Length: 264
Image (tube, rainbow, N blue to C red; front, side):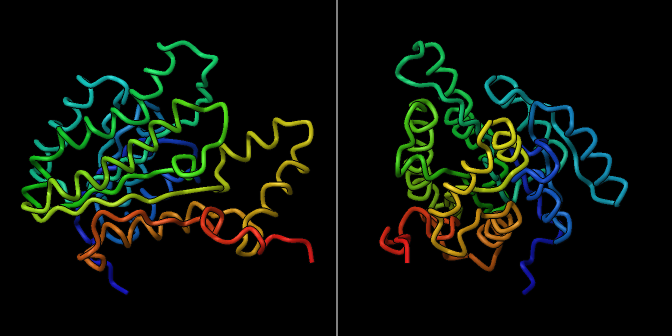
């Protein structure tokens, strides 16, 4: 299926993570579809990814940005707008499950909101004029934590709950401009960061098995590529009448009956 993403300007936040991370995988797959990924992230790996894309003939740029700094976000949007004149899709992907809990300070809670929620609002606000020019769309990357809770991560849970609220609010707000707004909800995904966390535990293998046995479909984690495939479809013209939706890619982790997991 042709997703008709060729030459589309797609902005992805938090996309200079480790190779094989969700953001970096989205960038790679967009380039394969002929789109022009624009990386917005604070990590200097973005310069490496930018060079790789440009060496392949992709007119991609990396805009180094601290996504907790609204002034830097506004500047990034202007840089992108000045270069391309429009934005066909904005993927708000940045997020850190930072374990800011009730035991932490109000200041830490506010910093968690700044990265995991306020950055979504600020990126969308400042990119909106360029999204309007293209009748583009917004895809917010969410988390099952917004729906299930997790424990000891109040900042992240509040942020991701807010992200889902904003997704539907923007879907309503932006109907007059033909702009769609959707969210992708992730549960357990086998990313490099997740692997590093498992490897840091004394009982890593045991912990991993306890997690995957609770994922109904095939008792395995979702791959970043499976998430990327869903993202690319959601932002494409093949999903042109889908807005205000929460798309869950999690092997049934959140919604399916727990009886499926009973020992047989």
